[in-house]
Image 1: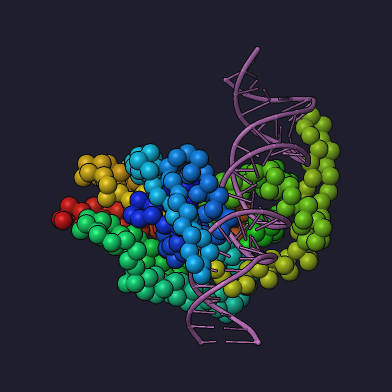
Image 2: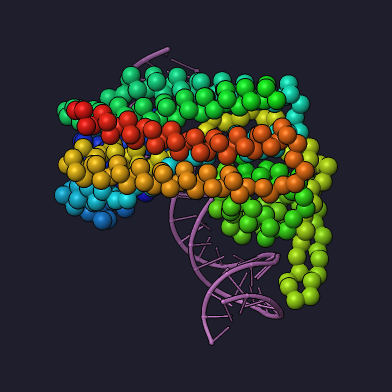
Length: 178
Length: 178
DNA sequence: GGTGTCATGTAAACAGTTACATGATTTT
DNA sequence: AAAATCATGTAACTGTTTACATGACACC
């Protein structure tokens, strides 16, 4: 899976510039790329070459010219193909687990402080994503089914953090009992 | 967080060769690197330069010579510093959420098939990690506290997949009701 | 006779991030 | 006067993966 598919997906809702795409990707909680220029402008060149998108240059007074990218029929077909392709298992990158793996050298107070820090960090993330869910609304004309899907995507992320939180609390209990 | 810390951690249990480290990292469920040669031999050079490790060349008959790496006091101090550093929030890379985001173009049967595929994939992963937990035992002389920590690390991963599974099932229900 | 293990390392490619560069306009 | 927004793009770097290379031995 590459950022190209995500870009095709976004363009399937409406035509946008690279700059617009960048902002959407940066703000999205499930499009996990940083959304930096290098990635996006390069991806757009690739999509142009494969004729999955076309672009139109629009000159503006008092702002730089912009290139508005539009998905083609070929692009829509490629998008559909990707949506139907075999899903991959999620990948979890939890550096904290590695810290824990070698945390037996810490005393109880230090270990406890570490857990508290992690707990706080997760709580912040959970709250942030709950907020994002409320504010989220980048595409118009949603069907009820699509709205449900998007809601569940946000819920997925929120419940990932909640599950992590529950685990830390379980860990703390186990350590206290011991 | 870099692979260097993980290597220091492993070497804190016992001295090992690059080849040994590679296998350990490849098999570990929470050290998320592929554990390829390039990364490990380069990391070891870096650790040598910082004097976090030393190495001793052992010549063998009928096998290639090997370099056994040993952690230094400086290395142990660096490891402790890293273990005490502020934990980062976990990162989730779920390409499936992006597929779902544009899955409203599918009909009910296609969407259902996609969910089933994802469910199966997650079930397999969950089972695999339950298996790994049973077989896991790379370091000797564990304290009870350390054993608890390692158990909870495995549980974390398992419950991540279980939480994901519960979410898919919730999603399927919601779609059925609608 | 082919495949796998032990053991080191390099080469090439791809993915991804941060920072730089421009230049007008608008906001603080 | 400084900072942010719009809009494009490039440069340099880090991180990561796959594949190549060597050579002895063991196993099937």
